[in-house]
Amino acid sequence: MPDSGPLGTSPAERGPTPPAAVPDAPAPVIPGLTVAPTAPDFLAGLHPPVTIPDPAPPSTAAPAPRDTPDTTKAGSALQRVLRGPTGPGTTALAVADRYRQHPDQASPAPAPPAAGRAVPGLYHHPVPEPDPVRVEEVSRRIKRWAEDEVQLYPEEWEGQFDGFSVGRYMVGCHPDAPSVDHLMLATRLMVAENALDDCYCEDHGGSPVGLGGRILLAHTAIDHFHTTAEYTPAWQESLTSDAPRRAYYSAMDYFVRAATPSQADRYRHDMARLHMGYLAEAAWAQTEHMPEVWEYLAMRQFNNFRPCPTITDSVGGYELPADLHARPDMQRVITLAGNATTIVNDLYSYTKELKSPGLHLNLPVVIAAREQLSERDAYLKAVEVHNELQHAFEAAAADLAEACPLPSVLRFLKGVAAWVDGNHDWHRTNTYRYSLPDFW
Image (cartoon, rainbow, N blue to C red; front, side, top):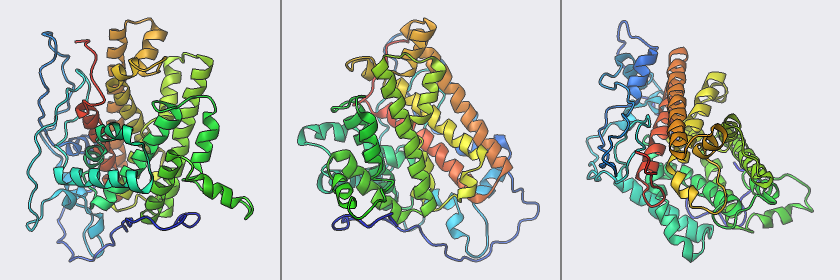
């Protein structure tokens, strides 16, 4: 439950309740069943082969070769583990059934591949087209929430909201979500985070001046202020004072009613990390400091996508227990996932940010300035940095799967990997927002 009761009337939509485990019949014991997957098996099982051809490059020069893993064989041991434990009360822990079409369900018509070109040479995994029925429904619900519940944007910003394609984004990142209600948990939080970034930091009136105070007060919408009776009403009134705070409060209210207390606290912690990264970047803007490359990457470890994949179990309708989430090797996996996906954003938003007023820091810009490289060479080196981070993430996930092959751990790792892949696909296909530089 929230730290304090909801303000005013409850939102119209009810948050989902994580599904309870339903006992099923014990499965037969398979002699000699291997439980722990090997690291190569785990990597092979994460990414089933998907072929999505890129459009022809704009120049006649051949693009850099794509660094892709061999996904022609899936580890049989891993597949058995991903099916989950057997016996009474274990149905909710199964993973493979989330992706299997049931006989009484009609498959939606496949959507045509979306336009968009991948960064040449970027190590990534293609994904299937997101379910178009879910995309349409999430898009409809999130727009209704933004307009009717939190009054998120003025009418003139509607095109930008639609162009963000958040429905496609969240459906692609959470393929194991059991329902649209679960997908909406992540979708509201994503939209709220972007509203704060735009309105406080960047496109729509953002400024580094006074950012700390604005962010701290907005943070109380997700990590509630506990004070005396005299001062509580003023804080409660402040939660409706601007769009980011309205969105934060509403999105978090839905989330805490569906998530466990430890999942909600985990999210608050990761949002504090995000806000600290915003403040570091703002401080550099005020002092006109060009960070060293390692300093920039350290900032991006906090100002990154981490709050999104860290709730993959909440969106999936299960929980990775707090002690397993806190393992140092799990923390390394989550951190590397956030770091790699954030460099994806730097690469795809590069031309967009160059057109923005003032100097906008991103990895290619920092490499060019600090290592005296041309724009092209700096961009290509940033691709290499991403690839190394992505490989490190996958190796760390595989090592953890081998060291701790518990069903909840394996499902969480698979969910984080799906988020990483879906995040790249959304950047690749969002031609409304992004275009690639002509470096090839």
